[in-house]
Length: 253
Image (cartoon, rainbow, N blue to C red; front, side):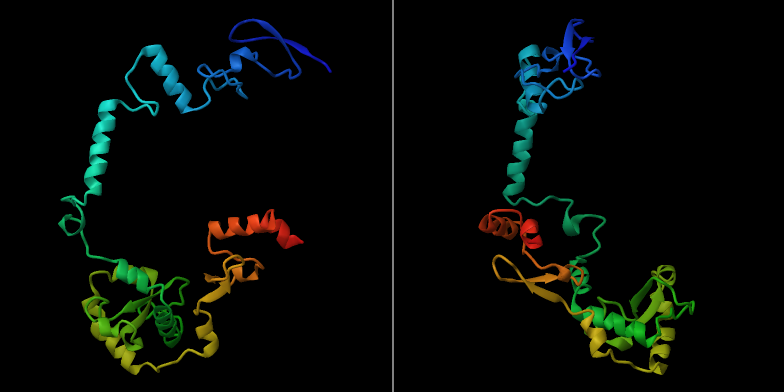
């Protein structure tokens, strides 16, 4: 083996190394606090914990190992204990000036099968064409003629839906009442349609059986191609312990 004589850039001492690009010796590449050998000369400490402990010894600061003063730590713990006692903040929820109501119900409903079928039926009735600009846009949205919150009974009624492109839908924001009569007249003249069984199957959820616990798991058509399915990481790790190896290697065999 060939060794090179290199001058350390920190201590200015000569040392031998098999790597010609080495710039510092082994002594200069150790952690300043615990003395652990580091892989590169750019680092001086193993992690932030060693740096905090070294800073305490050098400067005599009254700080914790996480780099936080005792006064700040007490204030933080006081805030955490106060939040855990259930004391509500004055600027949350309905008391906030930017509160616009609870939208979680609408977002949850948009993921349901009933909403997806209603949306697809409205698009099919309108021939996937925007009613305002009469263009077959790539981004279409189903608009409720009577608002979602105003008429809960008409949320999934096809006669209460109209097809709009994204640009037209944005332009008529806060102006829905101006187009309500026009949309209602169009729906009365339109020919009603019904989705076929094949079109409905596209929106129905796909379930597979977990390879470890045997429970039903919801998945997509792309993940359906896999041979092994798991509920979560816990089931995956339990399956790997049972077979004594990685599940991917077991799948290839």
